[in-house]
Amino acid sequence: MKKIILSILLLLALSPYLQAQTLEEYLVMAGKNNPQLKARYAEYQAALQKVPQAGALPDPEATFNFFLKPMDRFMGKQVGDVSVMQMFPWFGSLDAAKTEANYMAQMQFASFIEAKINLYHTVRTTWLTLYQIDEEVKLLERELEILQALERVALAKYKSAPAASTAAPATQRPSAGTSSAAAAGGGASGGMAGMGGGSAGSTSSSSGGGSMGGGGMASSGSSMVDVILIRVQVKDLENRLQLLRDSRRPKEIAFNSMLNRDLTLEVQLADTLTPVALPASLALIQDSIRLNHPMLKMYEWDEKAREAQYRMAKLMGRPMLGLGLNYMVFKPRTDEMTQMPMGGENMVMPMVTVTLPIYRKKYKAAQKEAQYAQEAAVANREAAENMLFAEMSSLLYDYQRATSTLQLLEEQIRLNEQAIRLLTTNYSVAGAGIEEILRQRQAILGYRQQQLQAITDQHTAVSAINRMMNSDS
Image (cartoon, rainbow, N blue to C red):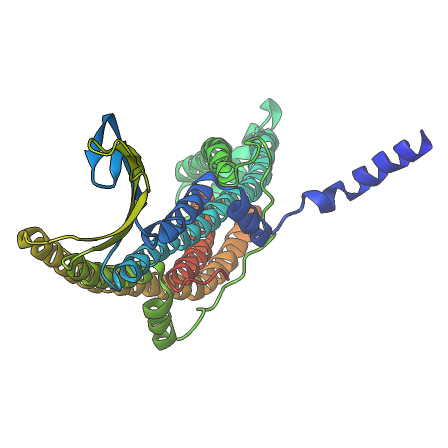
């Protein structure tokens, strides 16, 4: 019992390490478990089994003849005969057939390799999509925390604004016994303002009091507007967060289905993706595509198979040779004159058969068929190479664009963060500029999302280039 408990505790302690899986481990798992890849490999194995079939001789033919009434012959009464015949195609026909079948099997193997590298690329891109979703969720959660903190600041300003606006009128409200002093004070202030009379000073004093009261109300109103604007942004972020979290589940199910494992298992992701370099120079990438891409390999094998097919079609127009034996069974017969039994000895007769391929149209048509198929294979390979190079050019552009975007965004994010710090300080002191703060926060959030998209696009482009080079790295 103690051993069982210790084993359980050990498993629980090691569970984080057992569950943590890298992308390379996921690729190995997909290569072993993916049913589509298994199907392609089974098709290749089935094609290999056609090679010994194509190189085998035709089955020999055996014939058995029995006479219902024995036939009188000089050697006796023939009861029946047994013959065996083996046909031999023209010299080199079987080797040509085996060569064609072997090349066709190599085509199936190239199809299997193409399915494997496509599967690996799809696993990588799905994994990168999950990483992008998780990182974007972290960005939005961090931005949500900042906006909520900003909302608390704006709400505190709003709550403190009414107290400041009501305190100032209370100190300036004159009592009944001091009205003349207040009027004199107003006249004095009016004279200081601009050599006006007493009525002018009184008017100036009353307008000044009104402006102070209005300023307090404006500060209170603007603070509440700030709170509302921030809450609108908060609600928008919460909605985007929910949509992002909901979008993760279908991607995770698709990822697990490619690995042919439980769809509810969690996918382990990397903590941080760093910029990645191209796997090789442009010239090496082009050479690797020409030499290693399975689609081009498939057309090369197809061309060779059609060449062997043409050679076999020519040889099939030659005669086939058949060698065999005929064993005739006799029993003795009675001579009519001597009444003595005669004959009865069985006889063996060698046989030779030759086919006469005189209908030449079908053989010529078979040769033309092989020639046209070979021309099609050459043209298909050329078209596939052009398509791959066009795709490579597009992928290189995507990589360069992502790299340039990353370099540009670093400077933009730095400048925006500096502007936000200044705006936040100004808002804390003067209580103005919340719209610009929110605008800048939206801008920096957009830049960080673009940065995340660029790093994901860069890794996706490199994965696609590795796929074209038939490289698993």
